[in-house]
Length: 367
Length: 188
Image 1: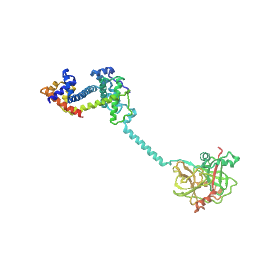
Image 2: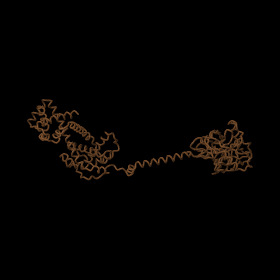
Image 3: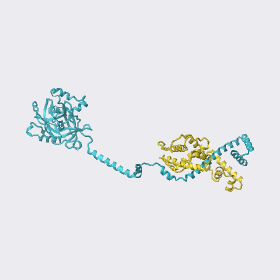
Image 4: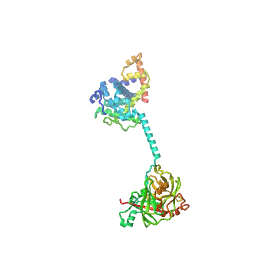
């Protein structure tokens, strides 16, 4: 024990360079002879170095802490910390108030929007008259080019091109035809055509509100038609009632089949039904009939965003239009609320019987 | 964003000479001169005042070690050196806390000081080892060792302070303490 302590003291003095030259030589002799002593010297040196470093750092830290205590850190930090913009400050200070206000605005907007969308059908109304010029440019592979055909037929009348086309149907044997007002609006001349031939017609009555127009065939070649096979329905049709229409979206008559899908038209329009029949430009003015052969409406448009949402003017307004025509000028006029002769027939027979009474309407416009 | 520092800024040469001469005054000047710069950096990069103090003091220790080791060449401004070291230390700390280290807002030029900082980390580990060993030594050993090795008191002074009857007793006590401390230090 005693020796150990002495040895330790000597090692320490040796490392610190406190030994005299003779002691030093003697110790180094001992060290080289005794590996245990040598190991102790090395270990103690490492330890002393670490201790010195430790002491140094501790002193430095003490000094720095002393200096640090002189600094007004809080004030300095206030100057140096990131300064958010005024907007951010405002937000931080009034976070909850702003959040509540924002959610109220959001809520109000959502409820307003939902009320609006409940009341409104999203799509817009698209009249189903056939715009020949547009169709030629977009669908000339599907639609026969009426313009060139007409130009060939009326070679002496090249400037008069069919601009619009629609459908109409007879309401009396002597050439009164009902169609949509929008089909013949602004027309310079109107021709109607069925399987027997093409006849010149003129506008006789128009009702822009209900979108109904009555044409009178003025052509002398026109021979009176036999008794009309269909009648006009008195009441309204219910949802789900099967209906069909005949029309001229092309040069041949086309049958469209479907059902009444809503009692009202676009945006709650009570003048019209909504029916699920695919229609195309050219179907406007076509008769809408139920299975018993009663005319329940006139096709007049569709919603441009939804397929199969077609609108038809209710038959009630056809009667109102008919009443506007001097009654003695109509011979063999369409009957109202009676049994139609199409009742009980199969669809193909009904179409066959009807097709002479359904006309293609061609509107010429010099502009 | 640069803010004028109120205290006098010592010249770089003054600081290096002061470090070599163990000048307390030089350390004080140095410390006051660049602390706001580091504080600004730490505060703007998700740290607080205490982080700034720790990082800055570590950076100064790195500087001291570097200067004392004798191979310190002033290739840039001292300010840039301290800033770069502080930055490097802080980024390491952020990474250890697994905080995001992208979008570091810088206020000064940056030097590559990775070597210096890694060397420092080794020494720092040794420091921590010694600190732990001393703390677990217990009294009166801790104070005796500290007085002898850190405050450089003589055995005579220690003998008087602790009321040992003679220096041999004090030496025996110190020897025992030292053996325990060495054991703790080399084992940890």
